[in-house]
Length: 287
Ligand SMILES: CC(C)(COP(=O)(O)OP(=O)(O)OC[C@H]1O[C@@H](n2cnc3c(N)ncnc32)[C@H](O)[C@@H]1OP(=O)(O)O)[C@@H](O)C(=O)NCCC(=O)NCCS
Image 1 (cartoon, rainbow, N blue to C red):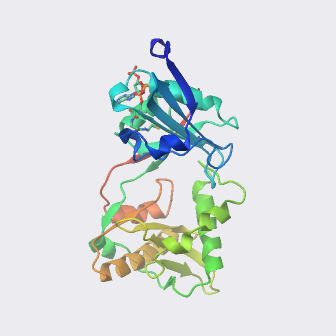
Image 2 (cartoon, rainbow, N blue to C red; image 1 turned 30 degrees about the vertical axis):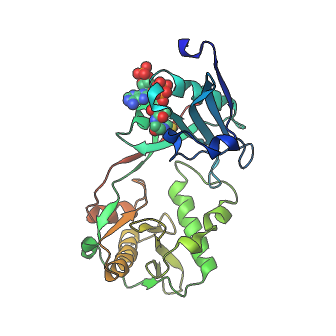
């Protein structure tokens, strides 16, 4: 690669780089090399003493099937092979022989880059912003209750189970993921605008969890078991209750976080005629 002839080298990303980062990486998820441990690595490309690209790879605390890959190249120096070269370098820093993973809207340049590296789509996220006016498109369900007052450890277990099965076919969870999933949950949850559905014995059958750390609020909804009779109806009922509370507050829009492979969530979402851009999660083979 001619670009890499002379004067150019890789080095670990350091705290000093983060103290005065180049403006073009300001909104990127970058941290110093080994910020958590050997599963979290980062590096920069230096050309003539100047940083021209930065990148990181890390394993999520919820999954251990692929390293997340984040690369950013100085806009003045793109399309010269720097991003590809940095990906190759980061590949040598992997503590385990696992492929990479990246994400982006289908029309993003990052996805063109990922495709050039041999990306394979492992999950698709549908357009996810809906008007709260559309809530009447969803059926109510008599088993739906407010989340307020429910035992927190039962909610955490139900959410972990929901998360586990909705990821198991395309990005399985790692052992002990439940602890990380529950971390900070009660700070981020809008308990009043969340809902659950139970059976006669009180077993939780579905959840709609509303998160308030985004604007607009974000709803995650599915059944607790993959094979839940009435699953679609239960999820609709939970989402409808959550949306009703948000609408009563005078809000107008809500976002959803789910996947095309979520069998009860996607039909409910489709009734709401959401707007937005399609999103891809991709696996990139390690070079
Ligand atoms: C995505 C990004 C890292 C690519 O860096 P780069 O140094 O330009 O990448 P490369 O020169 O190695 O490109 C390799 C190939 O990817 C594809 N590619 C890269 N950017 C592209 C774009 N904007 N449009 C279409 N294809 C693109 C091309 O096939 C390219 O090969 P070619 O130039 O021979 O056609 C850079 O555009 C960037 O920093 N973008 C903003 C941050 C970002 O989106 N990062 C996410 C990456 S995980």
